[in-house]
Length: 140
Image (cartoon, rainbow, N blue to C red; front, side, top):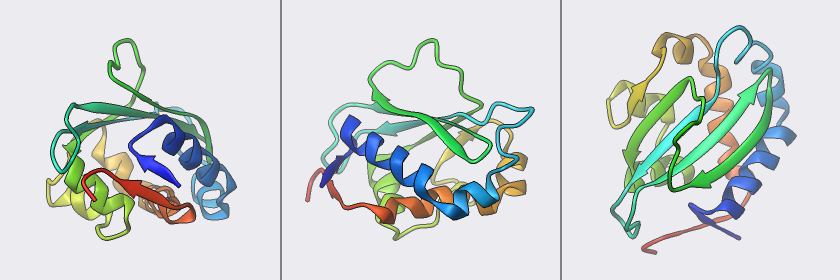
């Protein structure tokens, strides 16, 4: 069982994304002719003491890299999502829909939100991969 957030968790997530048929089917055009990489900025609270960043490099239905870091300087991400650990944890647990969180502004998004909406089936499929492996959480 991987601790969210950790590098081990990122590796489990990458495997889950790459093993998911819905991600492959709905993501064929994601990141093609635009930067589809994601940088998630997870802010403190709920057991997380310092801000951490999770980078997800994904295009054409495949995750090329997933990693956790303390400093994202120099990364090339088309989408930067900022939210609290508590809000991200609800998405990871399957208790909150990521796109609904974006629409309700629980997450601040830098990047083309229109692309997220246009490819919402893919984004939702990626978020659904969280349930493919067990996670444990800070503060619980």
